[in-house]
Each structure stands twice: as C-alpha cells, then as structure tokens.
Image (cartoon, rainbow, N blue to C red; front, top):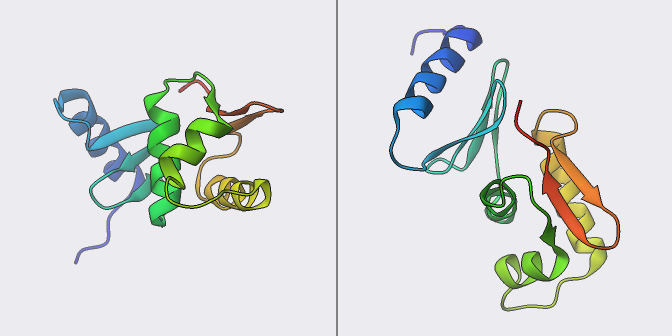
Length: 119
C-alpha cells in the first residue's frame, strides 16, 4: 500500500459522496464521512473503526438529519432485545463522541441526542 495524503483522500470521498446514489457513504461534518460498509469514520488525519452499537447510533443520528432522536427510539433500535440503562447509553455516546469531530453529537437534556448540523 502506498502512503496517501489525508486531504486527497477526503477530496476523493467528497466526489464519491456527491455522485453516489446509494447511502453507503454519509457526510457527518465537513471533512468527516461515515462509511457504512466498513463501519468506520474517515477524517483528514485518521480513520476510526466503530463498534456495532456505535455504528447503529451514528446511523440513527444521521438519518434524523439534525432532528432529535429520543432515548426511547435509541433503546428500541439498538437495545431492542435487552434493557438499556442511562449509564450504558451515556457510555456509548461518550465513546462515539471520541471518534467524531468535536461537538458532532448534541445532548438534548431529558429527551435524547441529535447530530449537529453538517457544515
């Protein structure tokens, strides 16, 4: 494998994103994409692999297009077969935030979460 420049990779991803008819590559924020097929986040300087639950949460937030995703919706989508505690959810969101650009996920206290508007 040849070394590659992060900026060149992001330019190529933007072209693919803009011309793509499927939803396998999703824009999180400027210079940050989510690759559904590989369950990873691609940024200029790094690629972060996501766990299954992190992937499901990010997909749910991205599908909401900046609207609120309630705790109940998260629970039924991600923990459909088990009980979800608030501590478990907080840990999942904390881990996901570490892998995304700063301030990507907004907490709506007492209600749920939303992805910040894409820039």
